[in-house]
Image (cartoon, rainbow over all chains, first blue to last red; front, side, top):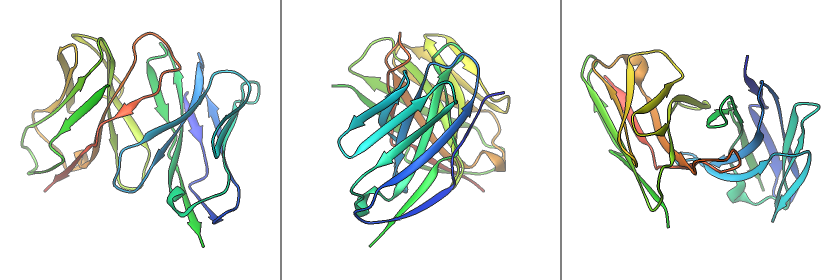
Length: 110
Length: 114
């Protein structure tokens, strides 16, 4: 079957670094994406990894290991506004199909 | 620039009533279009996606249906709503043709069934 697993909740201190892990199971894998969703809002795209390795975009980085079916999102210099839910997602099947994980609710505390 | 419009923002419907949610995209052609549902505090469940006019892929067999009458219009419908249809419905689009294109979401519709 197709599935993604990520922790349901994470708490971190402002200014710290936090890593949100995601493991997946699927066939026909194309890549792993990350989205951010604030309470009451719509998800917004953060990053995409098609190949193994680290992609960096400002304070956010995303990593993928295709052999381990594993990826993570790294958030550095945490700010209060980073409190949100973070979803990993993969493209599979005919690539148009996108499957999302259940999301990790990140709470940043002072 | 591309924009996605989804309406209404909130909707309260009685059980057994019909439903029609509309989503339109501007500023791009032949987008992939998606409908998702999100229960409170949960992940996004893919309901339908479309890669072209009249082409609909259904992921979850249920009392919902989708149609794409025009290139940039995607409609979610139901003939008779159930209590379990309550949730946050999100429309999204992505660029047709490659897998590394992000999904762009509308602001969503909060549907409450009474």
